[in-house]
Amino acid sequence: MRKPFFLSVIGLILLTLSGFVTPPQGYQVGDKAMLFKLKNVDGKMVALGDASATKGYIVVFTCNTCPVAQAYENRMMALNHQYAAKGYPVIAINANDGTLSPGDSFDEMKKRSASKGYAFPYLLDETQEVAKTYGARSTPTVYVVKRTGSDFIVSYIGAIDNNRDNPSEAGEKYVQKAVDALLAGKPVETPTVKAIGCGIRWKQA
Image (cartoon, rainbow, N blue to C red; front, side, top):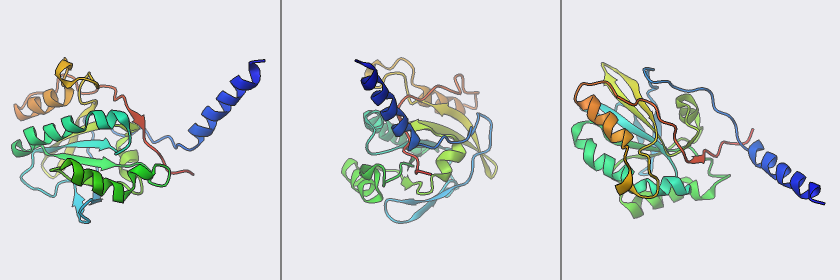
């Protein structure tokens, strides 16, 4: 009697997964990051490396609608407040397909940025090329990149910390420790940590 229900559940899962495209492997720590240029919520184009005084960037693949991304939103803002003046500003990127996820449309991104008072760029990866090149699969996922000459080298990939629900109880602040190490001229102790969040809503093939 339960077999039809089980098959229906499996079918629903497969239907859901069919709307997603698996991105390529993406970057590993030590790789050179692409110098992307994407549209910001103010309508202007922003490129990685625009600010020559930066020592690097905290690149965060995030979105409006994912509960995990929402839980980390204030921490993302705090990272920018803490490190932008030290040479590591935040760049937030939304790669979700706005057709599949209307809450992540460009208009909704503009509203979110304004309501939260983002002091950093919030960019639309409309073609999803940047997310696929980096290898981002979920939101939020962080890539800390360090300026080396005219290049940017990936120095950390993963989660912001190890406690989604309560930042005060996060025993491992991965991004903070990574940027502190880079500023001190030291190697990043934990360069990769699995990012837990919502899958990026890829355009349907």
